[in-house]
Length: 475
Image 1 (tube, rainbow, N blue to C red):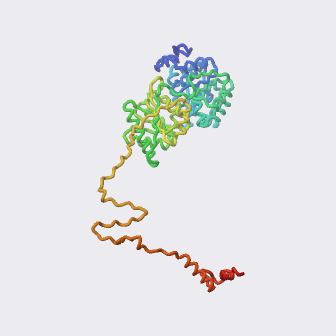
Image 2: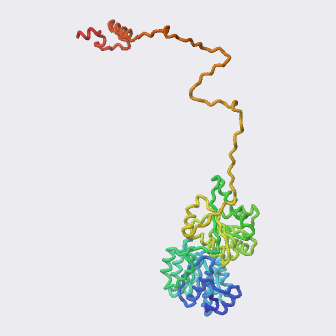
Image 3: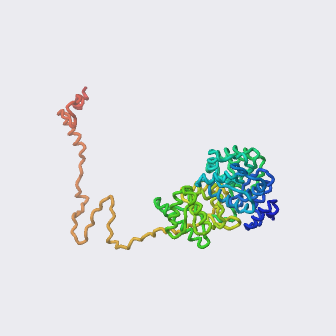
């Protein structure tokens, strides 16, 4: 088994790693650190939670141990898609570089420009930033990127999702052509592959696992949820979430609950607090100080449930997360990989449960197609009891009303009453003889014609009709 001591890291870095409690590198670390120390470009693809941050932080500290930073000209640059991830990288840098004299600056939104400008003016060895805030400082003339020796792009696929790719390409153009580039991502979209082909020079590709795979340490499951009525869908879905939490029992010591919309994040957190669950929301509309305070509370255990949007899905390293609940199926299938990657980290076991409503069927199919596994279906813990069929009470048959029919029936004669009609027997010899009346009708019609009287005709009678039979025969 490879040890950190075999990777030719600086002794001060090894001492800090040992103090942090790490003994052996993860596969992505063992694969990425050696070529990075040799000055080669690196393209690292690995599942989230496999230690990608240390894969570039440790060799960066080793290579920057010699030299000195100049004012407004950082020696290295780390780009992160979100403020939380950038802050986490800064924390990792403090842990691994505590035995060195290297300096850092964190450029993220929600913090005063004045404080950040003061750090840049003193000169920093490592600049950790989000793309938007970095370009803001550059356009204000407070920052030069011509001294960057090492450039790191972390969570590149998230950069693509958030629309940062044009900014990334611009930042690449502001840095020296001779820089060393370390590129890390959990998935590899075609657009990201195009960028790596453009800006990386013969990179060492380290692909620990197939792109967009989920960790084997995470037990997955999905509840196929169907509301009883459309207007009750939201409340019944929150009730199902609480039932899933209760079903996990004491094993669910803390969890992250992901929602697609910021409004649902707030509603979900408020609902959990109403029913006695210690929950707090985190999303992009909250100010940075509030978001950092919430994350600190979740890390130290004072907050049990973290209701989050995808701002917390990428790169956050909170090792002890036992469960991840996907309240909504993510609209982007790759977000599912990153969401559930918040649990089962550093070799620990984790569990990821998801609620799939009927309108999520398409997104759910995309998730299963991406991860190339069939997510196990689990039974809905809320038993929906159908109303029992009520039997009609037994009634007297004679008391029932007669059914209506189209034909009317003659009332039956009572036994003790006199019949209304007395039928008499007609003997054959006394039966009346019916005479044929047809000759009489013909004779009458002939008489009418003789008298020029035509029955049934109007005043405009043709002359030939008024003629008698003998006259017509003679003519």
